[in-house]
Length: 344
Ligand SMILES: [Zn+2]
Image (cartoon, rainbow, N blue to C red; front, side):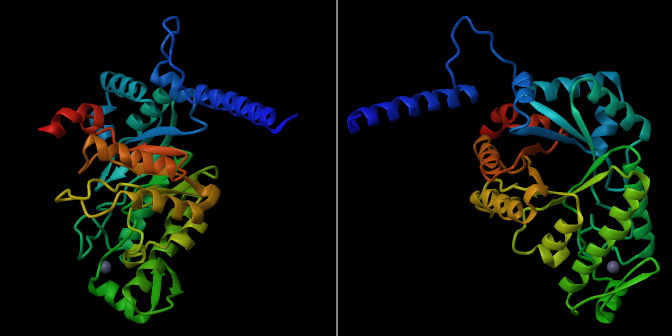
């Protein structure tokens, strides 16, 4: 064959391949005879490639999932949005969702074809931190006990538990100060050495040991099948300051999740993070977690429809296999519905 013929053959083969790829991505222009595919059907058929999920916070469970009417509305919204997996939260900010409501919602979502997992947000768990008023003092033995109870309760309901990104401490109370200076972490009747005497050293050791003893060991005693996901915030270079240890905690937990909430750079409340950081942190933590890295997580706060969508793009291009849209409690702030509001 002449080189010209070879070139032509290559062009035809590449053309056929590209057409097949575009068709598989749903990029074919639908002809008038074709029935449009619903977003729910499309999301279900493609969920092994990428899945969209959402979270019902503990307060959402109470306010939206306790009645048949609320359940039906939630299922309809998820179907219309292409969400095929839901996380039902058991605890957030000193509120525990009721077992019966959680169980009924779990069964109902499953019967409608959804994947269902649990979630815990460790805000206002027990003794208040001297810092951020949502955060707790985990040096406090009673707070350690309450933490364990929350996770045991959740493991009795779900085989997978996500921990939202408040799993840290910024407390500097006298008990924390004494423990930091003594370079010892105490969990119940167990004691562990700390390598240095900085707040970062103390908090990292505290959160790693608490995770091992009061979360992972505790939930596995209740439910040997349970998998626990640690979701990291969109912090990158200051994880350690409040006790996130992305290497040791990733090794200990079953799965990890990545916060990609970069939002609008110029937003007065939420801004200051460049959008590209969502892609970067997805790749960076994805590299640390490998197969443990399940997906990314972003919300509509401090975004326009354009930057919300950019968060989605960065998350997917960064290698996430699932995008968690936080949260059902903000459905009117998702891009389509939020557009008219954001433009005013
Ligand atoms: Zn403290």
